[in-house]
Image 1 (tube, rainbow, N blue to C red):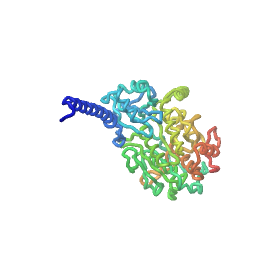
Image 2: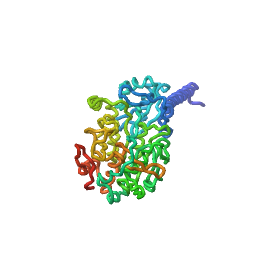
Image 3: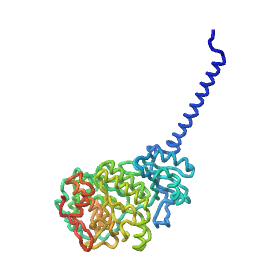
Amino acid sequence: MNRYPTYYFVILFLAFLLSTIFWWLLLRDFNSSLIQVNTAGNYNESIYEFRPIDPDKIIVDKENNRKVISNIVNIAVKDTLSKTKDFISEFHKSYKQSDYQIIYADSTLNFIQIEVPDDQRIAFKNEIKEKMSPFELLVWDESLFSSNETNSKPDFEWFLRETNLSGSVANIDASDITIAIIDNGFDIYHPALIGRTYLPYNVIDKSENVQPRPENHGTHVASIAAGNQVSEANFHGICQTAKIMPIKIEDDNGYMTTTYIIKGILYAIKNKADVINLSLGLQSLNKISVEEQQNYMEFGAKDEESFWNEVFTYAEKNNTICVLAAGNSAMLTGVDPFQRSPKTIKVGAIDQNLQRTSFSNYGSYTTIFAPGKDILGAKPGNKFEMLEGTSMAAPIITGFVALLKSQNKKRSNAEIFALLHKNTELVNNLPILKYKTLN
């Protein structure tokens, strides 16, 4: 005989059914939120690939008078404890994905790149910090960079003599040191570079293909920093024994952007480069007065300045020092926020008379000057050519820093700065590299 009445089992069945429905609805909503972040939110980093720069989206930003991509805004979360996926989840609660699409994310730097409507870029930049107030954000445009070099008429080689770096000093054993050259492409089979390259990387397609672009730049820069001796050309680089890590950051359309550079720097740091050469700078258009330059350096692009300082501080924490070309605009170094970090070495250019070249940037942000006019270097196709620019001065310092680190790989950035100071002479009121000691 049944101990319980029929209605008792009906109640149990209904309770079980309601419980099942409750948990199904809860898990469905939970899974939907995960899908929103991981699929609609594009958080799965493995699916990201760089989008080619659309030439039709390049505009001149009237606020800062430089070229930017009209529909791209970059964001970084300053708090290193924050998670990229948390930002993405909150972002999609505030913005329609049909209008504001996350197209790239990098959890290493808490970095997110967002595609916005062209006519909303400035408004979006102005409101995003307030709208996403739980997060402390850096916000900046996708600006275009260019290499800091110009063509030069042929002249005799002089930069090795003037810096006291010719001869045996270039052969000091620096085989434990890695120099990363972040640039537009490389002829790694050139006699000046062959047998010296290590972990080549193309940030655009994530391959080892770093073949040179039509404009010779990366090959020339790498050869100055660390090229082999090539007797036929009466040439050798500053440090002939270090490993060269060639990192290509120019896409097939000839563009170099903020994101490409960041990926190149991260690759170099992750692979334990000791020194990074960045012969690059933001594309500026019209010159402005010195007073306007000083005002912009004091008040302008502070988010970008902060962001780049965080990147270079990250490099410093990993015992990697970054050497930057000061630029060829005959303006104050530091107008470009990329150059303001005290963690980096900024290099200006001098000519054969030990005068600042007519094109070199200058000012208190400039760490040191080195030869940058009529500089012999490698050219793809087993050739050599003369180029000029702060792009040529920077790798001279990069090669010298590699020599300094060869004496003690663990030397800190502060120690490298102090040694650079010991190896300078004040000529024509400029601190110019003049090798005296490695210790």
